[in-house]
Image (cartoon, rainbow, N blue to C red; front, side, top):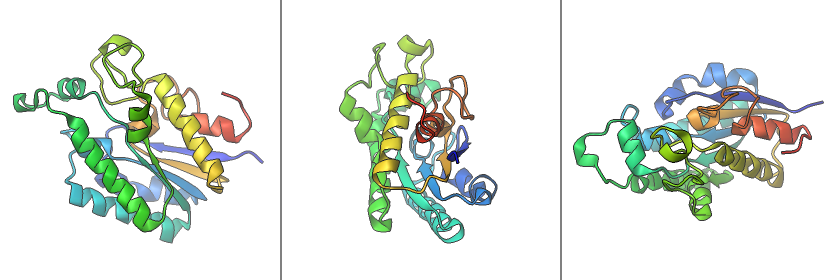
Length: 222
């Protein structure tokens, strides 16, 4: 029997929005495992800012509902770093934010997620450290985060297709190593889970990370 993967990423979501759609996008599917990815919009998207204390509370509530209502296993995923100047341009930050290092804020939220994972005894995939370790977050063409040179627009927040493949393969390895029950896997998150802006985004086609995990779980090579 093939493994089922349910795509539950939605662009622009913060943890407030994710809390509101849990019933229809996660719990209704009776998942055996949920990958829970969030944090970018909460921390560095001015249209979706959530204070760190509320972020922590929201995330704890999401985890509690998955544990208690779905009885599912959880793998928590922190966001990758961004290219600050491009995010500031993309989201039209006020002038006083020019040259601000948004990764300081992003890392604060990623660290909070790590603390929650430790408290809740959850496996944790930290994309911030994964991407930073590759030393390819830059304005160059080989950046793992989209930029004007490799995508034609100032993005700064979303992975390239190679970046999405990296997430998918690393996540798959984590799921296998930690012996997760992936019979019904829900990938719950924001536009990084959705796979924005590539072909197949929001589906199990293309190279968004739920699609990559689906193929690997079902014996297809990457």
